[in-house]
Image (cartoon, rainbow, N blue to C red; front, side):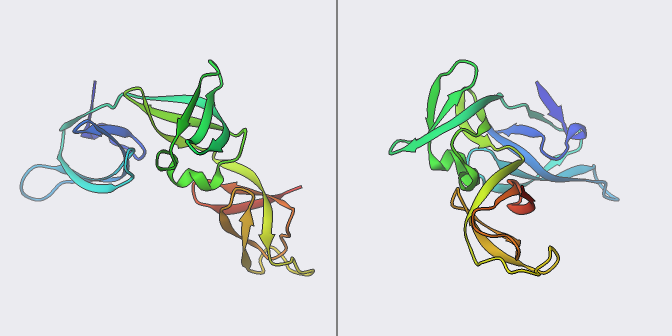
Length: 187
């Protein structure tokens, strides 16, 4: 199966030279002379590198053999990070490289989507929002409102994000895992 450049859209997964990519951005260009083309920015699902590729209008690209499985993160040991398939209860270990940036939000028992390419795990997708406890930050000050600025706070998973001044240690905050942004305090 193949996609035509007319089907390109953001986050579409395509395969180039046997490597799976996701489309980050694209632009259809119709010059005054010559044929139309599509300027595309793609990100490798294996290495994370970003490439700029130009396709002729109507050119076809392969559809990668990708599969997503819902899995639960169990624990970390010297071999890596252990996940369990929520349907078959099979366990597999992924390396820090395979997990990538999601490592900063990985918490025991959280359910993630593990992405497989040709049957091999290549990465994980976290839930869009996660609730995490603040373990380290400057004390919250009385009278500071939500619009009064921000400060760094270390969360239970080890990642540091910016939170409003009124957030204190021990509070739980909702975080957007795609951007690392504070969303709200969870009561």
